[in-house]
Length: 193
Image 1 (cartoon, rainbow, N blue to C red):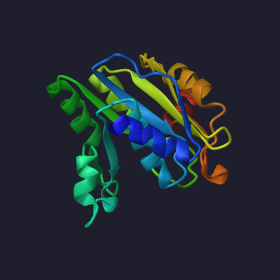
Image 2 (cartoon, rainbow, N blue to C red):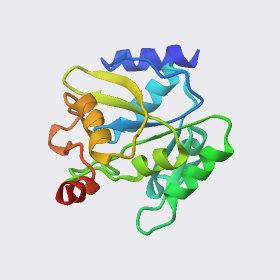
Image 3 (cartoon, helix red, strand yellow):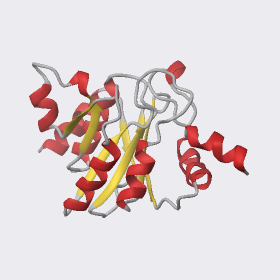
């Protein structure tokens, strides 16, 4: 019943879903562009429609009373962004310990315009040996699209080119807050070559 309710809620707001989730027990799904607080609700509704048991990382400041318990039951894992806490290692360890696990995250790490994506998702997926599944939100078409599962090679530029190709048309809810699909490491890789 929950998937049907999720689909009704999405359709009432004019959103459509396309694509399919991979038939895999473990992967990391990135949802972008993240430009609005409503992205979380849309992502969770899409996950419910796909019957996906999703764990997701969110900044610790949103896990406050009275919503903290609800967010945790919805799969939320609070993350402190103000200091280095070994989040990548913790997520890699969680994948190793789990029989199946899907972690979702927004690689921008914020709803504001940023010059590049945070690379944590990339290092988590590489460290855990799990593929990255892309998912986009596009305001113009009012579509949430799930892309293919990408096995990361370790060649940051090549892997990010494949990810960029998927997100090329996605604009997010607030157009002025969608930044480039790029990791800070790519600038260093370009200088080295």
